[in-house]
Image (cartoon, rainbow, N blue to C red; front, side, top):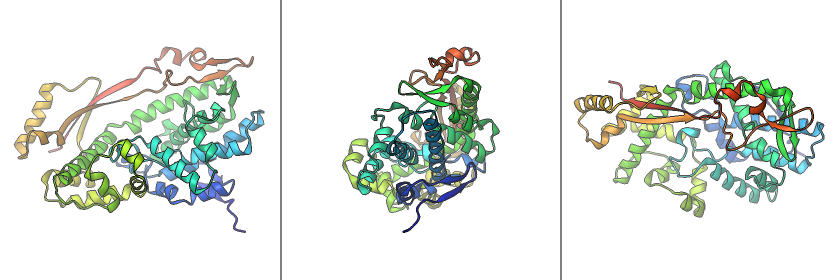
Length: 406
C-alpha cells in the first residue's frame, strides 16, 4: 500500500508532517496545487525581492501550526476528537484556496466576490469529491460547529493564519519586526467556556504579536511602493476590460478572457458552476503573460501602463495623513495633458487619489481574553498596561496620490 504519511521540509519550521491520507490527497489536488502559482504577497517583491513565497507555503504552514495547537490543547484536557482535529487541519489547509491571482492585490476585481466565499464553494465541491471527509472542516470554517474555539483558530484575532503569515512574510521579506513567538503563544493557548483564551503569562508575547502585526502592515503590506504597484496592475486590468468591452481583441489565456469581458457578480458566479471551474484554473501566470503581451498593444494607455509595470517604472506615490489638495491634483493633471493627447476621462489612469487604512486590533469583532490563575478570563486590554492607553483599537487611515513618472 502506498504510504501517504509524508514529511515536507519547510524553511520556517523544518519538517512538517502529513498526518493522514485525506490531508495528503487534498495537498495533491489541483486546486491546492494552484496555490503554488499564487504569490502570498502579490507584487511586494517589487519592494522586498525575497517576497516570492506562495499561498501553498502558507497553507502548509498553517497545517503545521494546527498540529501544534491540537497537541497543546489535548495536553491541557481540552476535548478534541480525531474527527475534529482533522476538521481543523483541513479548514486551515484550505482556508485560502479561493484566492484570486496575486492574492489580495486583485481581490474582487476579476469577480465581485470575497475570496472566503469562493473558498466555501471549493470546500463544498471537495466534500463531494471526497465524500463526507470535509463536513466538519466546512462547519469550522463557516463558524457553525458547536465548538467555537476551533473556528477561532482558523479566523480570529489570534488565529493560526495570522501567526503563520506574520512569521513567514517576515522571513521572506527580511523585515525582522514581523517575527512573533508563535511557539510560545501556541503553548499558552487554552479553552474556557468553549472559547479560545490565552494564559495570562503570555501577555508580553501577545503584545509583541500585535505590535509586529501593526509594523508589518505599514512596513510591508501597505508600503507605499506596494500600493503603487498594485494600483498600476489594477489600472492595467481596468483598461483591458474597457477595450475588450468596446470590441477590441486583446491577448489573454482562455481562463482569463471570461473575466475581462464583463463584470461577474456573486449571484451569477454561484449559479454557474463553469465560472467557478474557470476561476480555479487562474493563477499569477495568466495575469503576467497577458500584461507582457499588452506592452505591444496599439492602445497607447494600455501599452504604456503595461510597460511601466513590466519594467518596474511605477507610479510616484505620496502617502499622507490628509487628502491631496485640489490644486496639487490639477497641477499634476496639467502635466499629463501637456505630455499626452488623451481625454479628460482617461486622465484617471495617470493621476488619481485614494486611501488605505489598518486596524491592528478589532475589538468590536472579537476580543482576546487572558486566562488568569483563578481561571477567570479577562479582556487583554484590561490586563495590558501598554495597549490600554495606546489606541490599538483605533483605525489608522492614510491618503495617497499616485501619478505617472515623466
